[in-house]
Length: 255
Image 1 (tube, rainbow, N blue to C red):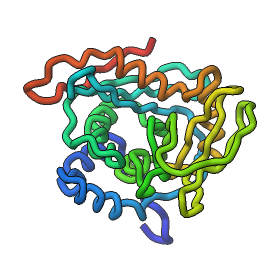
Image 2: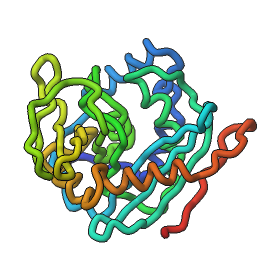
Image 3: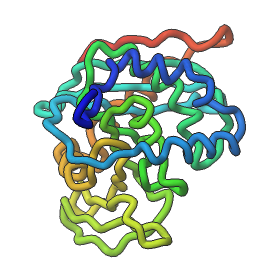
């Protein structure tokens, strides 16, 4: 494109398929996986969000005492917080449990679920980290770069960094700073007197608009409603026996 214009992102399904089909994105050892993170990290962009009408919450649940998993995606209308669409994908992890490398374990089933959505959410919200990560490239960054979509990380506890004291009132926040002093996210209180959540940029969003949206999406509980809905769905969905490989996603009617 001329004039320095940015090309429009590919449709969500096509972007998911392209990411899943590239073997260079899915190494099987930790050293190579860190190399992929280092290679993709410069592509992360921080920018204000435009109008957000729908938000997809993403979460992955695991069967107790087993290695089977279910990836859940729930799309909510931001004005009403009603469910627009939801899907699940069952399978088994394709990468070992290594802190800091969860994207290689959880993104494949999440991408397979996302590709089945009929809608195109304006924002994806992950139960996890973006820039607030040892290599500044957590799951939210990884997903955002692969799909070129706005993605925000919202976690229940910090992975890296520390922050100062917060006022006890809803909306209070403090910068989350890494050991080198860089601001990698924010501790944000979404309920009066309740522990904060930890918000970090994944891709194509900034902390100001991201935190404002997290507050809008958390009218009653500590966690944003899209993540709570995805967590409930991942826990309630039958994982089943997938010895013959991952099952196709299940589509769930809005309640």
